[in-house]
Amino acid sequence: MFTGIVAEVGQVISLLPGKLNIGASQILKNIGLGASIAVNGACLTVTSFDTNSFSVDLAPETQRRTTLGNLKKGDLVNLERPLGIGGELGGHLVQGHVDGTGNLISTRPEDSAFIFRFNAPPEIMRYLVEKGFIAIEGISLTITGLGPDYFEVSVIDFTYKHTVLQYRKNGDAVNLEIDIMAKYAEQFMRRQKSNITANFLQENGFA
Image (cartoon, rainbow, N blue to C red; front, side, top):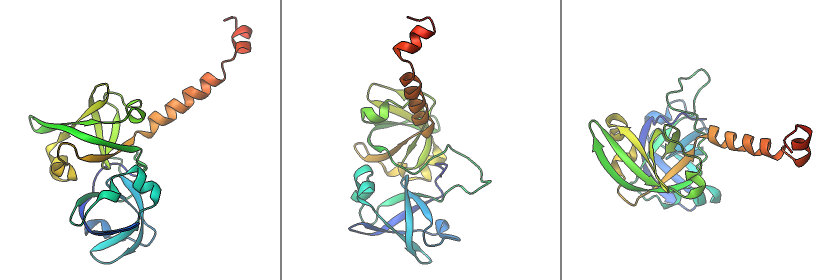
């Protein structure tokens, strides 16, 4: 489980079929084989490492759901280690299970922040609410505006300067993860509705 607070921006050293090697420093402290690292919001398992880089495998599902398969040598990526027991939850609960991708539509300054607008497919938009959470490239952000097929987030200057958002251009694809609480709420409502039958309505005086 992650919090969506990016710890470091790493750089792609190489990308081979099914394998990604990333240069980093801070994120590697006390790391071990099998450890989890979120790369642009996707939870991946460390398969090898040295003092200044680590490697992860990219499963076919990961490549289908995320933008990681399109990375190139030299690309910069957001990195985060999992939340430790008793650790500070600075963002929101992020699983590192990317639900899909969207595209950057526009960026505009607003005082000391930036307003980013992204489009997203219907299967993601249905879960979004104003002032709700979403993880973009693994960054925990609050939704500040919604349209039929787009949403907006406000990004403070610090987050802008310390994540890969500063390098994103209009049209670029980004990884998106829906707030897990929204998924649970929908599943709960589905189950509740499934229990309402004609007999139930008759027994309780509604029919």
